[in-house]
Image 1 (cartoon, helix red, strand yellow):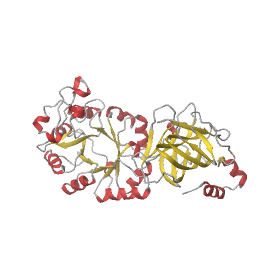
Image 2 (cartoon, one colour):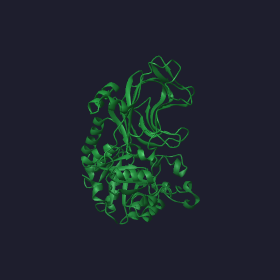
Image 3 (tube, one colour):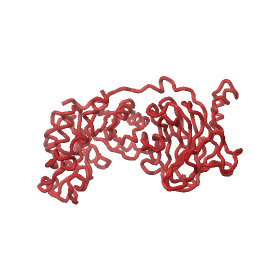
Image 4 (cartoon, helix red, strand yellow):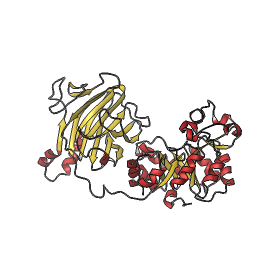
Length: 469
């Protein structure tokens, strides 16, 4: 069995202020400044009901009222877009004052919009505290949205004006609120390399004013450089893309794929035997409307948890943790996610009885208290705290990492949409490894490898091995 790699166990800015700063950095004076400002629009000279010259709103719903641009829904769940600028804009900073007037939907700031390729948009939901309250996502009208990065935050929006900005800088896309960076992704190369700018609303009415678009210098070679260390690959719930999740069949395929580790979810039966199962209920995988914890092991073993994935898996049974450890021992490591709190001792007793060596297993959990309990029972067992809601504020992220260290974590895990390069670097700086789930696309795997993520959880381990060579 290949050992776990050592790396995996690592112990309100407004437009006027911006113009002043821009002016200070230009040696050519006002003539050069004028060349760098492409749009400077406050709508004072635009008649009510109209749009500035060169602005278009194909779906309607956008017009000037008073001295501001108003965008609002004309029907439920209708996306309304206004686009402006030139199709060759590449390295730009676009910003505007935005006020949420009413509605529960979202507003977005669009960059690199073209008729032929997918652009990018910074989406701000009316409730930014939700896990995806802030998003960087693809911007093609009429196509399913592809989310590249999300975060959440405590921001009062209703009736409040905030300065929103988006920068496109080579392959970097960055979003700001009141001068603070809230999102970024280096995946700009996966959308159009250039294009126009715009706004979009869905289910909200907003007031937009003081729109400014300025040209940025091209990024330096240092800004475009990434590390290239190969990450550890973990088969998520076994090879769950090809076999029923959390079964011996899925673990066998994980072994055959040649990855370093498999991940599984563990709960207790009614007689307190650790078994592999993700959901608290048996309904999705076994068709039984009862909880795992309500049945003893003998009854659980009678259930078919394979047929839902296909007839060739009919008769697949719920494995015990002991059976799973026996199957993978000496072949790959097992990352055991402890689902409910309070079962730590039973899980670790089984692992100890299996005679595991250092590097044979890790413990994952969404509960920090579980991590703390495991560390108390076995300080040598690597632990990873799973985080499903990443805040955008730097001080909140520092607190989160400090909490992870206090709990004795060896690493932190994130869903792919929260895999922010700054957070990954910050975790590494304090000695924490980073794991990301669920990675099922080659482009995602390459991106996460570039930003130095330590472990990738995938449903498709047989393909991942070729993606991250």
